[in-house]
Image (cartoon, rainbow, N blue to C red; front, side, top):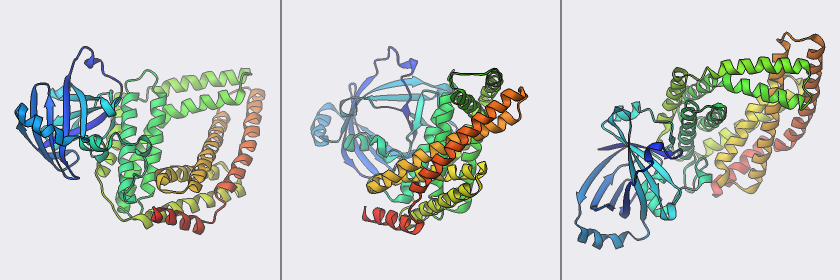
Length: 445
C-alpha cells in the first residue's frame, strides 16, 4: 500500500538551495478513475508502475524496465505525460518530502508529497510552514489528471467543476476551503506579521460554513452541526488578534488625517491591546485551531454525495429567504444585532452563489456581485458598531468622547441608508421565483 499526502508548495524551501534534483519523465498507458498504468524514467532508471485506488491510500506495484522496453512503450503515452524535477527534503521523524517542480505545459506548478508507513502516521503528520494547501484526495491534482487535462482551472478550485454532482462538489469545496485555512494558520505561526494570514484563515472558515449550510439534508444534521461548530470554534480562537486589528483600521478610517487628542489616546490604548492579542497566537493555541479544522477536512476528503441537486437548490433558497427577512427586520428596528444577522446572510448568499456560479446564468453573477458589495458594506457597519461599543467603555475626556461618538453616528446613518438601498436591489426577487430560476439553471447545465 502507498499511503501519502500531497500539498501545494508555499514558496521554495531553503532546503532546496543547491539541490539539483532528479529529472523525471512520466507517461500514462492507461488511466481511469480507480487505476493507472504508467512508465517513468527517473535519471538512469526506468520503471513500469501499476496503481489502484485513489486518495491517501492506494495499492502500488512497480516493475523495473530495461531501456529498450521503455523506448517501445514511451511513444504510446503521447498526450498523457508530465515532466518534472524531483527534490528530496528530510523532515522530522525520519520522513522525506518529495518536491516536484513541473516543466513543459505545467511550468510554474510545484507540489510536495510525503509517504507514510501507516494511516495513523499520516493523520498525525504536522506539515512544515512551507507546505501550502493540501491536495490529497482531489482527483484533479492526481498526476494522471495533470498529464491528461493539465493543471486544474484556478477559478474552479472552490467552485463546482463541469460534470460534478452538486453534493459531491460541495464536499470537495469544504475540503479545499478547510485545507486553505490550515495552510494560512501554519503560515501565521511562522510569520512576523500574522494578521493577513489570520484574516485569510477566518475567511476560509466562513466560506466553509457557508458550504456546510448547502449540505443541509445531504448529510446528517449531527455531522453538519458538528463540523460547523468546529469551524466556528477555530475562527473564534483566531478572533482576538483580528478584531483588535479591525478596530484600529476602523478608527483610522473614521478620523482620517485629523487625529484629536482623544482619538490619539484611544488609538494608543487599542495598539496596546492589539499587541496583547497577538500573543494569543502561541504554538499551543494554533495547534488547537489546526486540530479543529483538520477534523472537518478529514470528514469531507474524498466524500461523494451524488444526486442532491434539488436539496442544494432548496438550501440556497432558504438562505436567500432568511436574508430577505433579516433585511426587513434591520429596516424596521435599526438595531445593530439585526444588521449583523443580515450581514451573515448576505455573506452566505455571496459565497454560495460563488460556489455554483460556473453552472449559472449571468444574472446570478450580477446578483453575486451585489451580495458581495452588500456584505462588505454591512461589514463596515458592523465594524463601526463594534468600535462604538468599545468607545462606550473607554475612560476618555467627555468632550473628545462625545466628538468621536458623533462621528460614528454620522457614518453609521449614512451606511445604514446605503445598505438598505442596495439590499432592496439584491433581494428584489421573491424567494419562490429565485428558487425556480436557480433550479432551472442547474438542471439545464
